[in-house]
Image 1: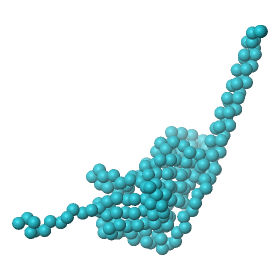
Image 2: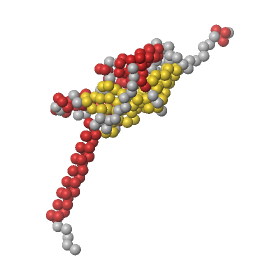
Image 3: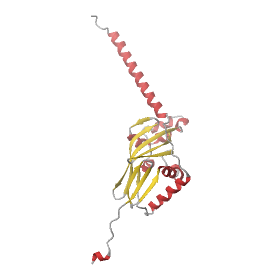
Image 4: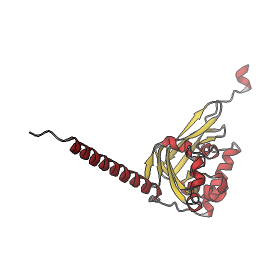
Length: 222
């Protein structure tokens, strides 16, 4: 059996290298294409009345006059965010919020590439992008779990469980790298003292009033 010539070994290494490089380029192109593809987003139908009802319910909570339980529907949540909040304060444009149940919330919307990269590790490269690319919208979808914690105050925390850019799923820690701190504050909401718990059910959220300690009458101190 003749030994393999060193020249043939070199040819084989080159071919293998080209195949690996081509595969890497194909995977990279597939990932990039996925980032710019729009996901299938199911819009939530709502009316102006839904926004008014949500605003009234939230005002009652803010004034610490909640009922035993307050139910806010998915339509009311979307109407309030879309019609009663300043768009400049929202991290995403035209957000769509789905209440999935089992304390799961899904938020989808668009953000420009320029804003997405502004606070990321590659922010210095943003200026090198063409102006058309910087203003190009890209979809961001965050699936989070909702829970109430108490550390002196009651806090509603939305803990990211899944992050998708376009149609491409990416690690959730990237959310804190690509969104500015002002946007991330919406993941941590201070609640009125009278709010005891919050449950996310399919298409609605239920806010339960905190149980008050029994009042002691003057006769009990005699």
